[in-house]
Length: 212
Image 1 (tube, rainbow, N blue to C red):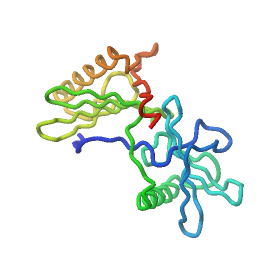
Image 2: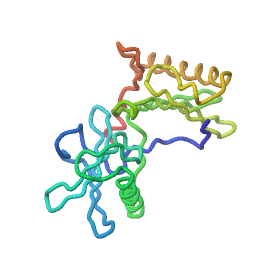
Image 3: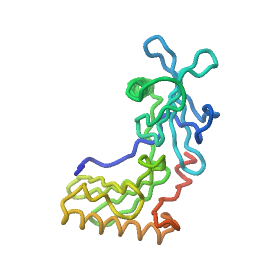
Image 4: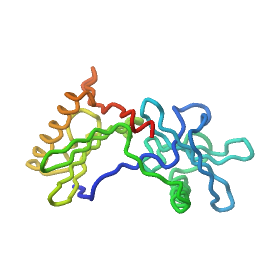
């Protein structure tokens, strides 16, 4: 079980590229940095429909040498879009870029645009839908205990409304599942969460966050 301090999902460093295509599209922001005598770009976008991506690109003049993608701006490159590079090497370069951007004051953490949050007397509940390809798409449910200042993060790997069972012992699982269902029901009632025809639960985009 993951027990952490209050939760803010890393969403955007420099905000990234739209959907996959033959090459990166027009960026909403770009950070260039030097690493081992090469100039790299991290390009970012949070699109109007709430999807968020970061691309790491190396060019030779205007020709792309390699291009990798962080599908949900969680700080890890997920796939190679073009060129010959391992994800391990891409992530080494990517982490360097993030560190340098932070040192230059160009790194920013923002709440994910698909975030639903509410509180009662005991807990602050945060539910985030992360959209990506298959295993990179999930719901993240965070419960912060106001009294103990302890936060627990839980994952619903397929948006099904059922938390992954391998995170807890059975009795603990039932407790957190009930809280998750409470959050889903409240989100649906407030029209912040959609239950799709396929039976999945998706947090809708908070337009106030995408316009920041």
